[in-house]
Length: 60
Image 1: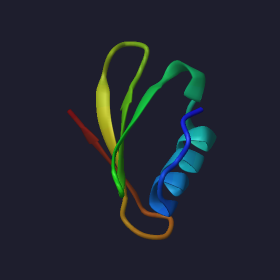
Image 2: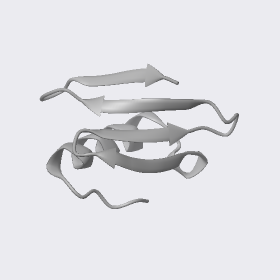
Image 3: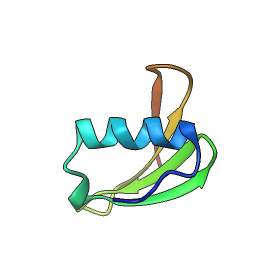
Image 4: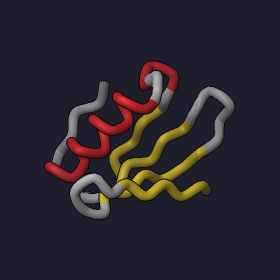
């Protein structure tokens, strides 16, 4: 599992861990509030931390 660089990324990674089989994801840190994920089907999405218990997923 990738290591978070910020508290916001930590919350995103914990949410991903609870929501997905993270071993099947390629995870890239983008910025303080965002990580990019690529699934086994090569679909890409950005996951953004928008405050406590608020996660926004945007497909690319």
